Length: 344
Image 1 (cartoon, rainbow, N blue to C red):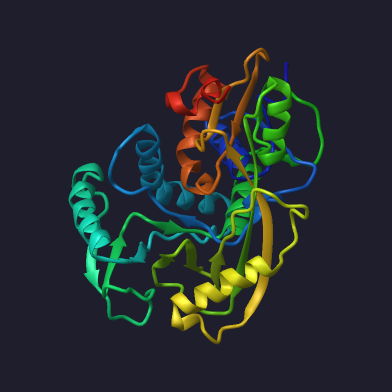
Image 2 (tube, rainbow, N blue to C red; image 1 turned 30 degrees about the horizontal axis):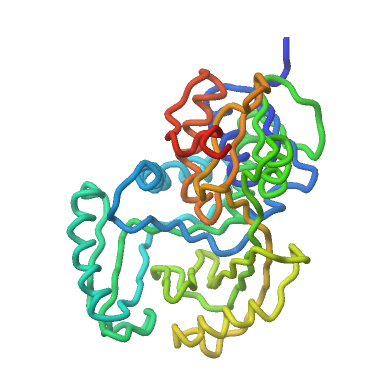
């Protein structure tokens, strides 16, 4: 009789959340990652859990909406088991409105959010005028109440401790036993591409910075492609770049300086705040930009969970649920566009 029911390769957000969900249902789990917990892009510092715009609804947007709704209870449960803090809080997001056309679209989206978000959150158009907001050319802002934040590194540590608290193992090496889940990030996408003889996805490098500004009770800001995220520990993260070509996966450079400079310009409150940490990592981007979830074709007992490019933490609670169903029951409500076959 196997001592382990589920082996998970990869101690990033997908691997850890799936292992936690399986352990919560009584499975004996082992997580294997030679590089340690959150060693890849999941060990970052930004942690923006933001929804897609409330329009042109599809299965991906519905899945993410469901996951964002699940997030508060998910992370509260994880932190209760671990005794640590993931830094989770649903404090919303504020964005500037660029011009008259964007203002018209913002008002239209406020209406569709009322229908699509089912009263669980709002998308509002508000007048500018506070001390914590991005500069707005029109004097108007969008504030949604669905967006949340967490600290990625802390969230991975909390998940790992919760798994151990439930009797699970986390190790840098070990044997495969039971069902095997491959959640191995951008390097896993490269391996899948080689295995299937076609490009399944690739890595996209991102760089971010942590600033010594305490706005922990404030919403996150998003403007001109820059995320500004106040964390519960009294720091504020800004990010990030998106680099398809890179030679040094973990090194920061002048591209991050440009992001910090843009953040300071967009948000005057950051103007004189020192940078206290710089980070770089490679995020797994699937060919379809949707997560890749499901059984590994031709490898019975093996499953894939990968491709959480930019939305991995926001998708994690729902990904954990459906993948635990797949692992333990042999079926799960995985959207067609997320299935492995859709990426081949």
